Length: 257
Image (tube, rainbow, N blue to C red):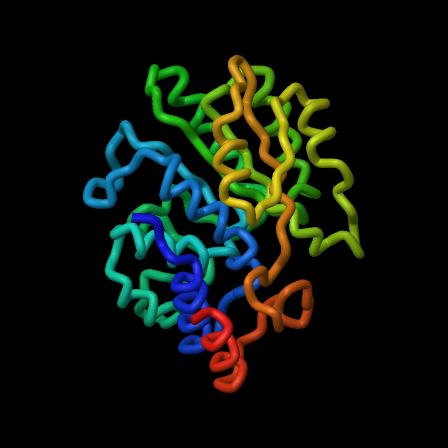
């Protein structure tokens, strides 16, 4: 069953409102991507989250955790009610995803630049062991200023890891500090198959994820907007790590119902 994205947006904001923590705009900018992956692409069984044949997804930009938690709960990896405990001391759901606590989380991430090389290692190991599953990772555009991203990109193309897909959440939030420039051209220069899509057009995202890339890893540069879906948050840097007031929450409820 395909999920109503506005229901997930509300669950993200509700979790943040209850805890006073979380990066809502970052979660909203990747939500369409996550929905396409979990609705239409990834092979997984929430009742058996460690099945060796499952596809792997690594959220390298771990501060977008609320988006991942909302989708994992929706797909049955853990009860939706668990979202209400987000950020609490005894909760399994922290500000960054913990693979030792959260079913469906493959890698503990948060320190930027670490998830991508871990996904690369998974893809290489699966190639060696002849595991036919695929590995998908999602990185941020600011994160791509880390040298590990391009070291990983070089190594992945060298080993011709066509079981690896890297999605870039290109929301341009760091452009004022350090612009990453033409990401598609950069990945192409590292001998990847690369495409650019509207990161909020689920049809485009799905088609991009099915791009042929025999003998090469695939990079998808998703042009996104932080806070997408919320009029008050869209493109507003003040919301980067802001908790909504009850009045602001009520306005979001009206917008998403």
